[in-house]
Amino acid sequence: MSNNRYPSFGVLLVDDEASFLRSLSIVLERRGGINHIYRCQDSREAMGIIAREPIGLVLLDLTMPHLSGEELLQQITENYPEIGVIIISGLNQLETAVHCIRLGAYDYYIKTTEEERLIEGVRRAIRLQEIRLENQEMRWRFLTDTLERPEVFASIITQNKGMRSVFLYLESVAASSQPVLISGESGVGKEQIAHAIHALSNRAGPLVSVNVAGLDDNVFADTLFGHHRGAFTGADQVRAGMIEQAAGGTLFLDEIGDLSLASQVKLLRLLQEGEYYPLGSDRPKRIKARVVVATHQDLGKKQQTGEFRKDLYYRLRVHQVEIPPLRRRKDDIPLLLEHFLAEAAHDLGKCKPTIPKQLPVLLANYDFPGNVRELRALAYDAMSQHRSRMLSMEVFRRALDQQAVLDKPDTHAAKECLFSPDQPLPTLQEVGELLVEAAMERAQGNQSLASRLLGISQPALSKRLKKKDSPEPL
Image (tube, rainbow, N blue to C red):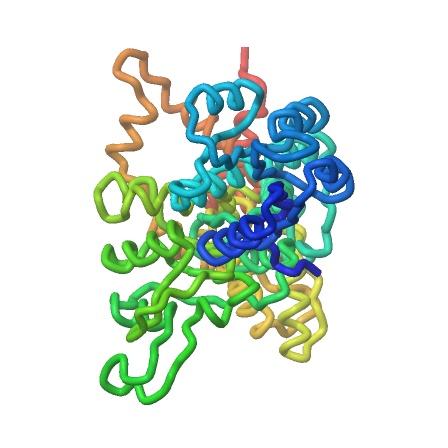
């Protein structure tokens, strides 16, 4: 298990002053949340540490005995070009700074005067390294199409390629400390994805879930940040917020698109600064949890209309996955149907029935506005009414018929779509033949299902098919 170090790679501090190494370590941990630190007081030992340990970033002094910072910088960039180097020097010399940048350093900071800039610079360098590692991992996974931990996704029933791409992406960004935005329609399984992200990250702490829809600003702040005794009327004792409860783990904020603008400001500050204030406290606490958010709304459109802050939107979408709706995963419908019927049979104490061959075909022609959650509800309803060996299709037919009424298309819009004014109109016979052909293709040759799609009786469809297949008289 991970011990929740940040970042996932090591940060090596190289300086011949022991007191500066100690103070820099404390500043990075307390103010930057950076605790995966290695220290080296003898510059001659630095390359050996880099060879042994998973170093991704080096903070390097220039003026040192034995091996100067400039010489060590050249050795690192030549032998380990993937490792970032930041120079921290007591010399405030522009020429020296430019020379170090040319040799391959990320940045150059003065020891005594630029503490705040240094912390921000280290965070920025860590983020660049994380992006590089994630891209490298992603390329490898997509090229090899290899899931390293398929057991994490075992509870997500799918054989869909789009879902597999989501799994590959999640494995690639699992080690990152940055937020993850999960988007997708209601019922697609966003919470399951959040659980998978938490499991993949190997964090020792728990997954703590909060549905933020409907929370006003005060309740949101109290729920996340907690409060001290006497912070407000009724605050009789200290209460830890969800952030503290999720320490070392994952904080999952569901329905983030419904968050008020005032609460969005608080969340933005939490993500930017990495710290928060419990209500009634003037001492900040550092967040020690990874933030994962989910929404069924289009945050891109919401930020364009001013309903969602742009700066928060871009903070949240550092890593983003969109879960495809069930209508784009029709190859999953038979698998999910089998799974939910077996689950329902077990819960209801019944034997799992035989599934009619026409049922998967019928469901493949349905849009499932409620997605996987709706299919599960239909399966349970059908099982509760099941009496014979063969599962009845009536429950599914009723649901599909009701949805067909709700989704009845606008005939004017349909005309605009089908018939361009620049093209001649097809004949009635041609349109009819095209509709019949399309319905039979969707129904996989089943006349009963095709007739339902067309809104005509089966005998009427059979008559049309026979007429179509009959040779024209000479």
